[in-house]
Image (cartoon, rainbow, N blue to C red; front, side):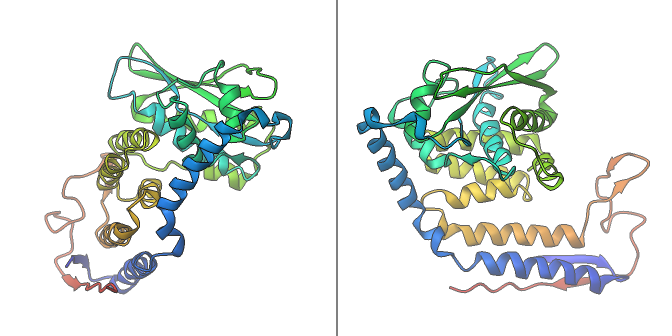
Length: 327
């Protein structure tokens, strides 16, 4: 049972906000949606679709592929750093979400693309290249494939390059690039997403651009755990993927995309309510006991905002929150 502390002034408003967050998130998550119970079926359907596409490959008419259909495959990696290597999967996965937010592209379903890559044994980073892209695009029904790569420069700078391969003509457009230190790698990914959308002829609305620029996490350790999970998921190792998604959520409880991916894994619908409840509780604790950012120090102070802080008001209250979930 969490014990929530906050100074008495404005207590009602803060507690109400936190409890509403708990009621909304936990209440919704404790009732499993019908779609959450059929995740294994979606995986099976994706695998069957991949086998069917391969069996009927000769009959595929590339001219019939939707004009704005796009697939994103794992990036190539040219670095010996095994810590950074999983980003080839994590950044590609986040890029799918960002391209989808434009509202003007038809992104290939992640499960379907993963299943196809396993069937044709192209799961490894960079295995889909200018030579293999036309076939992969035809089999998954994408007119264009995004081929990305990661490299490391001296000084810790990470470079992301991305090209657009046209499946119908086998042409590859000039690469777009972005560079950032590892700690700020998502800034480079966002830049790549926006520049790719321009290459694809998408004019973003202000709302869509703002959604794309929003970072799913600012915790690099959580991002690396998410990337390892994405790598396991592409390879079909769902237990290992689930463990890494949980690690990402433990490191950053606000990493909503990690929670979404976890809930979509086979066998995870039964634990989805518990993980969502944990995130809801964490959100409430953060709302009532927020971390204090010192305007002088420029960052969070250890122990600031809590009982040990000299500036903390002497009058405190203890709020006991009991959360009961349906069986």
